[in-house]
Amino acid sequence: MTDKKLKIVVWNEAVHEARNKPDTMAEMYPDGIHGAIAAGLRSFYPDAEITTATLADPEHGLDEETLAATDVVLWWGHIAHHEVSDEVVERVQRHVLGGMGLVVLHSGHFAKIFTRLLGTTCSLKWRNDGERELVWTVKPSHPIAAGVESPILIPKQEMYGELFDIPEPDDLIFISSFEGGEVFRSGVTFSRGKGRIFYFSPGDQEYPVYHQPQIQRVIANGVGWAAQPDQFRDAPEVTNPARAWFLAT
Image (cartoon, rainbow, N blue to C red; front, side):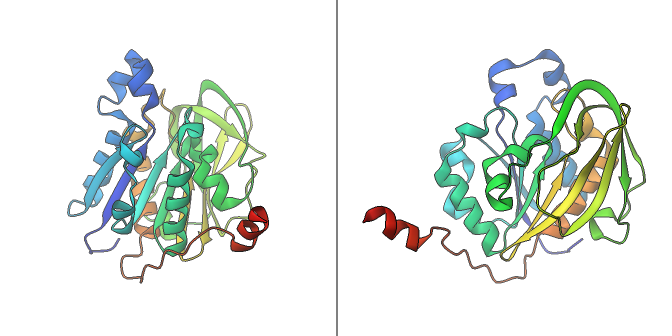
């Protein structure tokens, strides 16, 4: 992990916390899922500037100035993907293409930013019966797998299964297996423009997965890999001038 001071933003739609406030979730994540993820990161990056942002914040907490100064954004979304502003999505995409890292977690696979960057539906099979998940390391040489035990045992978790409709990943690092026999590519990387993307599936709002030390380590490793603090950041426009001209004529 880099010794440089990183700027990390943990983004969470925070809709469950704000609207439903289920007792079990409040007990597991009193500061929200974003708070738990940020707390886990602070144990690995005590000198980093780690902040949180939510859907309800102005510009979702992802304004131009914030993104320009951010090394990595972590994205957790679930039931409010459609409420995320397209303008903000395009802004985040532009900064990823310019070199900002993006770590997408659990049901963030359906986030607008993830599907836009990958160009596929990112759909998958799922059920939520609180099954055991085993997270197997299949590329131990990758920096994201450093110091991670294999398998990681998650006692209860939502099942995600194949087919996971994503492009061929740059790296397949983790595969999960479930009690029903399903398997899932639970840890994969992609590159888009100058930016690095890591998707990691474990972590449903109904289970205390983000308090598990090994899950925290994987996420911290993902942040360390996705961050490129020494790279010159160049955030290109992501519009299509030819299409804009066509629509205007």
